[in-house]
Length: 442
Image (cartoon, helix red, strand yellow):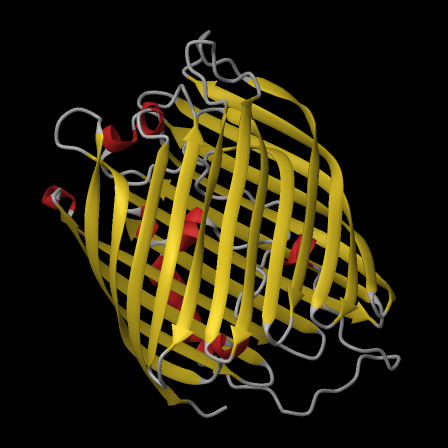
């Protein structure tokens, strides 16, 4: 999936840029923004000096830490381990008046002591593309790929991007040291057809795969996809309202069971822009879901019903501080779980540049699941996940940065063996980053 996304972006980069002069919308209006409830894009998290564009960067991260609950060689008892990690980085970022293209690739080599059998090569890649096809039409696309056996090496799996829409995460339950492949793809387009009228649509795809199923006992490989279409109108320079139809389709395949969940939602949304850097949004409406289990059996009945779909989000970005948070409640499937379930969750991120060379950042996630009735009493997937990290960053020089951080994962899922035996894991770490960059022309 990441390869297909990269090839698509390469083709898009070949499209000639439009003229630098941007004609006004008919009627003398200004360009509308795509509200967070329907854009499908994550809120920005860059803080202060971290906000950069138009550069090609290469670097290396040297990291050491302590994890208190690594699976032991005997039974399921966790043991403490010191970890050492080497992480090269490659970053490309280019911005023009009409487009922005970014790409990041990060392999990481992790060594454990004393559990050397856990030594691992992980990989992470992220690509995004934003393009204004004309003064009236804008599009965006992004792809995120993670291949890991240690989620503490991939902070995005603990905190996750903050998205203003009700799009479910590909991972609902986190197995911290299981081999897993996670891929998320988003794409959207919007068309401003009048001074205060906007229509558009978006689509997403999510993949979760456990190459070694024994490491994720009680969970399953799954994938999800969906799309939405919306209409929005601008009430004033700072207020947008509209409506959207959203469709989601998810498949889980635990052993010989095949679970398919489809959900249809019609929601109304409202967004308030306090200024160019602050937004508040709410969206809600009815959701109809249907889950089919094959082969049909009493332990996994097929169900359907109605439930509310609710999302709320806030984004706040200033020169020295940023904050983003989102709450959602919906019925979904996949995410590693069987059947369908009610999902309530919150994602948040906050960053503050305390001084010119000092920055503190923290991201967190809370989610709770409740069966819709598709899983019998012999199997329970009711539970909750709390995860997050906090870090203190210090710029030592033009090319060198230091970081001190702490990550925590706590889960309560009594019916899922892979997490029931190790519900709590903590990691403290220290890293040094050396980065070189070369400016790119606009």
